[in-house]
Length: 187
Length: 164
Image (cartoon, rainbow over the protein chains, first blue to last red):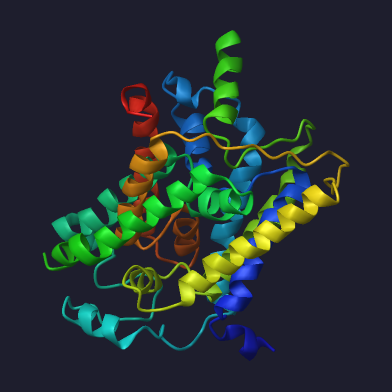
């Protein structure tokens, strides 16, 4: 049983389980599924700085911080008790491309060669981790949601602004992965 | 206090995402149930490799169906669930009516969406996976998360000057 769970889970198992988060949160307490708002609540709680956007009753939304802390714990549980002993299997074309940038270690969920503490002090690492993170936080709030709030919750509730947002997420991702990221990885 | 209420309204009208529609107030430990949902969700994230930088790269190069299958089937299940909740008027476990909000379009969904897309393909993570990656021991991702929090803060600071 444990061996069975340790394999990577196929999309048709994981996708529906992720989708079930939507009714689970609604039925447990009328909460709309979304993750990027947790970043806003952290701002509101730690450094509101008199900015109107952060002046609201964040304590009412504290459930969201419990939820994201749970995701962190879930990651730890999965890696300690249910870890897949094999490296991630990727498309051979991707493996060939990444080998050209010196990325060959597939043991972790993040590429160890380019995402590590010493790399933060290099231009490449700074762009990948610091600038990338900034774009994630700025962009999701500007868009009013991320993959969970727009793509999953918004589309599930047939919201057309969420469809526009989701299309833009994908367009941005295609541009970065195919046109800009190769330049960064070559640094 | 008036201003406080106004911005609270703004949370709902302009940013009706991931909000708490419940009018009930509970003791803090009632939040444990969301922690448990988060834990299960985080386990699925890791086991399906959704939080893998490599899987995101495959997705944006159209080299694998995996991520499309996950997002697509998650939406299908979410859609069916919401349809059932509306059709049968399913209540919360506290007996409250479940509320849905329509999102209004603004240009932020385009500009912000594109910016987030760029960041998603660099970091290989949207906000949820950042938390899961830290949990799996990739401690340096704490810097990425802090930077994402900083990005959110700067958005809040510049919000009035940005096109919406």
